[in-house]
Every structure is written in structure tokens, then in C-alpha cells.
Image (spheres, rainbow, N blue to C red):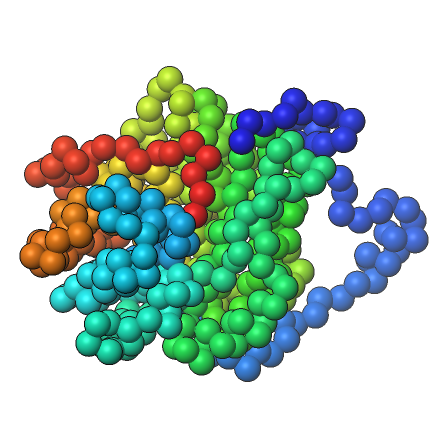
Length: 393
């Protein structure tokens, strides 16, 4: 969607206008603020379990396989190899992924779409049990997608808070132990202060509700690759977005030790004339994280955001060349699945080869999490970019 001309009279945006103060500056409000005392985070029934789940997912040499695409998006993937978008075909593809022998060596968690959480293999074994047997934690996408944000610069907000508590309780009963909520921020559209605040507040409410129901929340404000801006602009926006996110997470009494983050890497816009090296991306990304993310957070699980399979792995490897305050790993969808789909092509006789392809990518990113990956021997297919302007799940 094209961005409207920014209207300074109705919308403030990062780097152009100052943000509205959260509290008034009157003497009475100042006196009230000085009398405020700190309140401890209220005890949660699942606190110990949340911390343990987060630590399990953020374990050395492992990351997350994201297969939580909506039915419509999964249909696009299937159509790329000539398959119809039917439940049977979606089940077949996800069975291929989730029953890959040895996957748990490199994958600690798998994010599922609601349909998949309740599905079984053709032999009748629940997908959740397939994951548990492989020592992989089942997760669930809980947001209801992006819709236009009124009063913004053609930006969006993420819906899904209505009924989230009851849905989360049911997901927990079904075996899910962590959740994902994806909202987005667009740099070409500003971003407006309204959009940033809406994204941060929605993520914080979702995180609090998830923890109350035993699910570790993955906090994901994706800063889209769209645009021709330099890497410095991405850093500026990312710092503002994450400062807002952590402000509202604290306001909502979210247990930091029981969350995981899924940030975008700090890169230039996809249409910028100069491409950044993995070392530069690592430098800017880690600078942002060290300025904004408390060390209490156990894991940073990066999204690939349309980078090529090789790029996503190289950038992750560059960030793990020295110790970090948190587990720095991956939560990839396209950057793990692209080669798999092209190998499978919907043919039963190609399932084993496709599963080996998944293991190749999973192992590469496992090595990158440990800072030991080498791009030597990568095929040309893995180097092809997967950026799609205005990409949606």
C-alpha cells in the first residue's frame, strides 16, 4: 500500500517531530510522579515454567522454525510448486517439515498456525507429539493479522486481543508453550508516532495475556525492509520502536525472563543503492540491542524478513563472533523453507530429499548461532533474495 504524504498537523513521526510526552508537566502531576513507588511484578502462576520454556528455546546451537503462515500465505507457497491450496496439501507439507529425522538437534521451537496445532500425521500422530518427541517446543501464532490504522500515514495495526485469553488457554491445553504476535512498522510511511505506540501497546497487552495463560510470548515488531533508506535510518527507527516496546512491557508487568524477542536485523532498505556487509549489519544490530534490550531477556530470535537463505545465515553468524548478553539465534520461515519447497515439488518420492534440504539449512543456522558458519559450498539457490514488497502473512 502506498504511503500518504505526511501531515505534520495530524501525525508526528520519528526524526521529524518530537513524541508526545507520556505524562503531563503540571505541578500536580509532577508531585504525583515524585510520590510514586515501585510495584513488584505480580506473581504469575506460570512464572517458573515460563522462564524454563524460554531457556529451553534459547539453547545453544538451536533456533526456531516458523511455519505459522496463514492458509492463504501457505497457499501461495504451494502454488509456487503447482499444488492446490487444500488442507490435505497443507498437512502433507507440514508433516514433511515436522517429521524430519534429527530436526531437534538444530531446532528448539516450532511456531504453528492454529490449523496445524490441531492436525495429525496421516498415521494419526498429533503434530504436537511429533515435536515433543524431537525435544522441540510447540508454539502458536495468536494474532489475527494486520488491518489499516485510522489516523495514520496508511500504516497498519495488529488485531487479535479480543478473546486472546480464552484462546491462549485452549492452545496451552493442546500443548503449545509459546506464542507469536507479529506487528509491523514501515519506515517509508514515517513511521508515525501513533503507529509505533499502537504496535508497542498491542505487543505488551498480548505478552501479558500470554504469560497469564502459560505461553512464553515472542515479541515481534517487524521493521519492514521496504524503502530506499540507509542503515542509519533503520537504526534510528529501531531504537525508538524498541524503547516504546519495553516501556509498555514494563507498564504491563511482563516478566522479562519469560519472553523472547523476534526483531528485524538492522539493515538498509531493500531498495537502497548500497548493500551492507554482514559485519556492518552485525555492528548496527548489536548496537541497537545493547542500547535497548535488558540482559534479563533470555533470547533474541531474529526474523529473516525476505533476506536470502545465505544472507540470513551470514548475518546471524557475524553477530555471534563475540559473546552477547542474550542467546542470539534465529526464527526463520522462508530462510529455512525455500529450498525445501523447491526440492519437494509435491512429490512423495522427494520427501526424504526435501527433509535433508531442511536439515542443511537448519544446521547452517545452528552453526551461525555458535559463530562457526562458513558460506563455502553454498549453492546459488540459497543466495537468491526473497524480499517481497509489502509482504504479509
